Image (tube, rainbow, N blue to C red; front, side, top):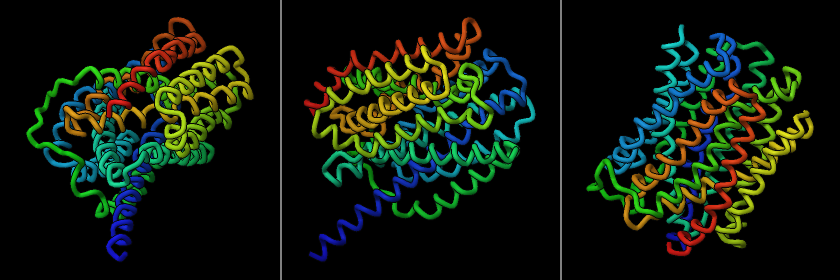
Length: 388
């Protein structure tokens, strides 16, 4: 009985520590997202100009992907996650110091690089901890990421209302994140699930990994759009008062966080295929409501539905990728991230270019069309899940 209690306490400590790092990741990225319109104003960027600057993020992502998978496989996710937990918030603080466009672009490149290193290492940790529990808990980890995003935009809203400079805001988030790292790092899982140190840097993914990546891409295009453009959409299209421009983002983050805390239960009851199909329908319908009825109440309802729709997609595909029989967890997650998070970071710049040529409403309509890819690919994910 004593050994069982110790084992349960050990598993719980690993889970709490990993959850704290998910919280740090969500807090850091959402803090950047909620000040994008301030960055746009500071550097006097047009929609297309902002889109061009934001391209630095996906470039940093693409450069980091093979490196991240290799580092996590060779060094272990624990060491990589601790390093990323310190450097990712530091890059956020540095963005507040950018004196010009080119410095901003360089820092956003580094921010994207460290973001991806953080994502891959923390999801590898989560896969190992899920294996210890022997049941689905991945969505709850991502729920903490979303909850942190909600907290981050809440802090950002206060900072904006107090007219706090971007630099002071970002330095505060960096300091808070470092304190959380110091409190949690020693309790991380020491070894990864089924790690293979002989895995090559450029591992060729199999068809199942590519399909999971496409599902993640369809969902993360929408997530990236919500993060980077929701405030601007409410400001320009919905014409919300300045103090309410973050309402859409808060609505999206609240239902995405809530959905992730209950997603594991629905997956167990309904199955992967059904949950993904429902997710795709909710995402598309929510975007269409916000597009066709661009008013404060109706657009907020639409964003609430989008949050529910995307809540379980990424946790599901990353959990499946981490259980790959052909690739080590870090490499498999990196392979899915190559396709999936490309959508997360390419979506916002694409929105800028489409908005410049047409309008924000048309650009959101394009994202709604891409969201239907989740519905179309749901059957593939269901078959992959059955094979695990």
